[in-house]
Image (cartoon, rainbow over all chains, first blue to last red):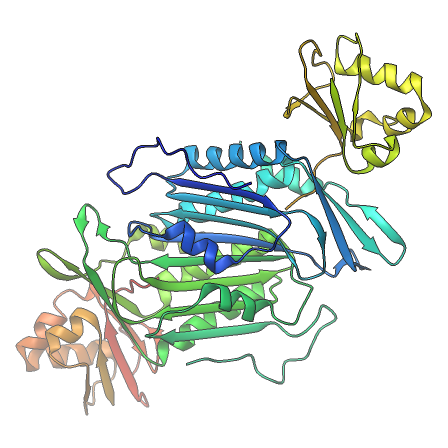
Length: 168
Length: 168
Length: 81
Length: 81
C-alpha cells in the first residue's frame, strides 16, 4: 500500500523532489524510522512536525477495551494521497508522510501518523494540522469501540467538521 | 540535565501525573524513544504532537557548513521548564518533552525536539507550537553559523517575536 | 455495478459488497428501489442524513447519475484519525 | 558578583565570565562603569538595544537594582530552536 512519489518528479534547486509516502496498513509503525525516511539524504529541511493518534482507554467517561478500524480499500489510499497533495500545494513542503492503521487495535495502540517536513516551522505545523483535519473528515475510516455494554460505532464529531472548515 | 516531574505530584482520575522532561545536551536524541518515554505506561493519551528542528545547509541563499550552539547553563533549563509549565497550565497535557542540543552541529543534525501529549489533537498541536514559539524568543541559546565568508552570529527574527505574541 | 457498504450500513444490509443490476438513473433512485425490495435496505437507508455516498471511489451526492458507474459505496460519516 | 557574557558579547569582552566588585546601583550604572573602564566593554555595549540582561538567571531590564545580585548576564537576543 506504499506509494512513493512519481519517479518523474524533477529535483529542484532546494534539493530532491518532495516525497509523499502514504500507507494504509494493519501493522504498527515506527515513528523514528518514518521521520528518518522523510528526512533521509537531504539537509535543506528545517522543521518536521508530526502528529500521532492513539487509542484511548475511555471515551466520554465510558471504558474502551479496544476498537476495530474499518476502511475502504482503494478509496482510502487515494483520499490520503489527495490530502497530502493538497497540503503540498498550500505550503512549501519537502515531504509528507501519512500512515493509518486498520483492524483490531488495543488501548494505547498507535492509529495514525502524519509527518510534514518544511524549511519553516510554521508551514510544517500548519500542514500537519491541515492533513489531520482533512483526514478526520474525508478519509473513509470507521471506528467501532468495544465498551462494557458491547460494541458501538463511533459517531462523527461536529468539532471535526469545524476544524476542517477553518482551512477553506 | 534531565528533570523528572516532582515525585509529590498526585496522580489524577485521568491517570498518572503529567510528566515534564527537559534536557539540554550535546548528544543527539532519538525521537521514537522520546515519544515512547512520553507515552509509557498510560492509555489515556489520544494525541502526540512533535516538532523537530534541524540544521539547514543554507540560510537566505548562503551555504551553511555547520553551526555552533551556545547556551546559558542553568538559566536554559529553568527557562525551558517554565515554558513547559506554562503550556501545561494552558492546555490539558499529560506530558511535555523539551530537548535542546548545544555545541557543534552539522547540516541535517537535529537541534530541538518538542513533544506534547494530550487527550485531544487540538491541544497537543497548539501546545507544541506554543512551546516552540516561546523557546525561540525566551530560551537563552545563540547560533553561530559557518559560511564561506566565515562564522557569523545569527540575528534574532522579528517573525519569531510575532509568533510568540499571538499567545498573549 | 458493484455496490459496497461499510460500518453499520454493512451490518444492516448484511453484506459488504454485492453486484446490483439496475436501471435507476441516480443514486437516490437506486436507494428507493433497494428500500422497497427488502427490510434490510429499509433499515440501512432509514435516515439518509447519516449516509454518505462515493461513486467510483470519489465522494458524491445522492443526485449523482449512475450511468457508466462501476463501483458505488454507502457509508456513515467517517471517523478515522 | 559574577558577570557572564554570551555570544558576540562574550567575544567582544574577551571573557565568558568574570568577578566584578562594584557599587553601581543598577545594571545600567554598571554598564556605564564598564564602558568607561575599557574599550572592550565600550565595543560590547555600543548598542544597548541589541543587549539583553538576566539577573540571577531571570530576564531583567537595565534599570534592575544590583543589591544582593549574585549573577548578572549580558547577551544578544536569543536564536535557539
